[in-house]
Length: 349
Ligand code: TXA
Ligand code: MG
Image (cartoon, rainbow, N blue to C red; front, side):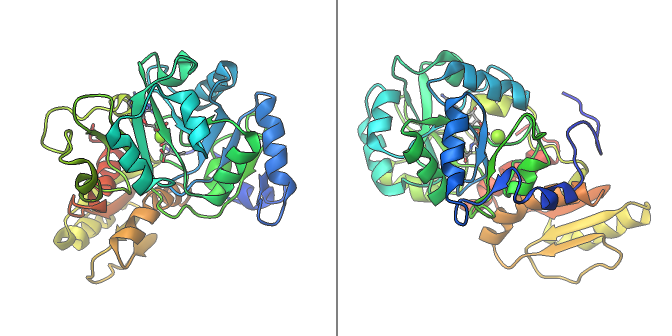
């Protein structure tokens, strides 16, 4: 897939966000009617964006195939890429899956609510459009008060991909969502502030003979293996494939160049010398190169992960030509961070 960079249809100026607070961007913590209005819209088949602890989601009632179809068309999402279904209770789980393997019970007990999506055998009532025709369904319980309040008030599960147009970086703030979709297409964005993790959930497939990692996320391999034993699908092993990984992802509006910590200043100097507008996003020490249009240095890996997508969005808003990003070691949270960064930089997973 090729996409033009820079301003295009759907790109709104950043100041649209500020103008919209009090309009379609609503904060349930100081606007108690916001969740009830979201439920009304969802029941009428309209999409609603909501915060989770990972990224913002674009929700539709999972059992309403027309509403789910609308989400696919809004995002421009390929029909062969299934959605994660979000729930807030065990009762909702019963309507979605055809039985729980022992490993699932242990993982649910340990990690839910939280950033872990489990791929399980699906129940008959789940519409084909949600699972892209697969005989499995991905489910998770988000760890965010607004997401849980919305699910409880709706009383049924929500299918929700990340609230970005297909192929774009995921949104970690309400303003990122607003910049992505016109008000006529998305009438309500529940604002829960910046997402705590800022990276999408870990996706773990439990439908086969052994647990398989399909997408690394904030729940790390190191945390999962003590609970379920060795995972298949780790880097360097044969195909860890979530259907979504076949598609181009996280394409920002500028070039992303990954560099080792020791090469950051050389790479910045080279890009600046070429006359480019350059940003640097890093976690290690080192001197700050002069002449940068964006400089973000964070103190640790968790903050790095939280800020990855926000920095990609900001790089676009600042009209950077290139964002230089530090490579981190692909261990622990670093595995998920490098997965997103490699694809933002144009590598195919
Ligand atoms: O953190 C998250 O998971 C966020 C928030 C909103 O919850 N959602 C999210 O959704 O990242 P999305 O649609 O952007 O990514 C869902 C991923 C895709 O890679 C998709 O292929 C995979 O989950 N997936 C969904 N159902 C699956 C299934 N039945 N089998 C294998 N992979 C599946
Ligand atoms: Mg996504």
